[in-house]
Amino acid sequence: MSRHWILAAAVLAFSLAAPAPEAQAQNDLAQALRIIQGKRFVDLTHAFGPDTPVWSGFGQAKFTPAYDPKDKRAYTLKDDGFRTTYYDMVGQYGTHVDPPAHFAEGGITMDEIPLKQMILPLIVLDNTPYQQKDENHAFSVADLKAWEQKHGRIPRGAFVALRTDMSKDFDKNPEHFKRAPFRAWAFETIKFLYEQRGVIATGHESLDTDTTDKMESETYLLQKGHYQIEVMTNLDKVPPKGAVIVVTWPKVKKGLGFPARAFAILP
Image 1 (cartoon, rainbow, N blue to C red):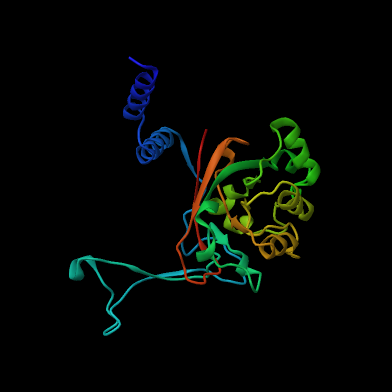
Image 2 (cartoon, rainbow, N blue to C red; image 1 turned 90 degrees about the vertical axis):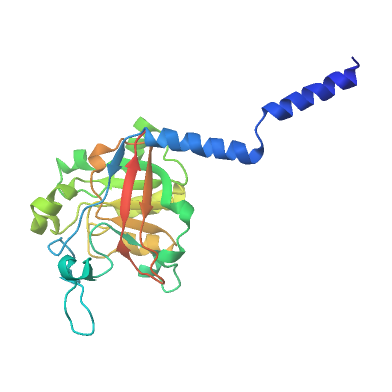
């Protein structure tokens, strides 16, 4: 057999053995799903209700049975075969997303945040050791650099969450959860994360980004086109690095904030 025939036969055999690009993509996705399904998931979201702690300027939510607008009769399983609820609440309620438009006139709204920004590498910074000396310690750039000395540089494109364990008071002691000042970020740290480390988004357990009422950090990051997740929970169950966060929310047209669902996939 000539060299040409041998080469042709080899190419044919390879083409028959190798999957088509579409099939390979399907195989890759199926394999990724199998890997993900074998991992441990951690819910980073509080359940919320009418008694959930919220900023006093907004007030508590009200949940009432939905009713027929014709006669105001509430729908019931017995009479109608279904039931549903009217929710009367501010968008920034419970674990929620703040889109840029929340603080920025020309910022994107929650329906415009790119889908690829809803699944990101997750970094968890731990403020709790510093709180043993100062209950209201603001996580500093020095604290961040100490974290990097131990765990490595924070990767570009990550979601960075701040653990403070404030979430433990959310249900057990809601009034204490709302106390001021919050355990939260130092403004310089937020700037450093976005400007020097190129992170996509940040999150925290408190009702606000800042330890003070100046809202410098929140104003900065939202006006720079980033989103944040507030009132997170279970960050003590997630490793400092290696996990992935998935965050989603209803696609409210021109929405300025809404309860979100966030969870971590552990390595």
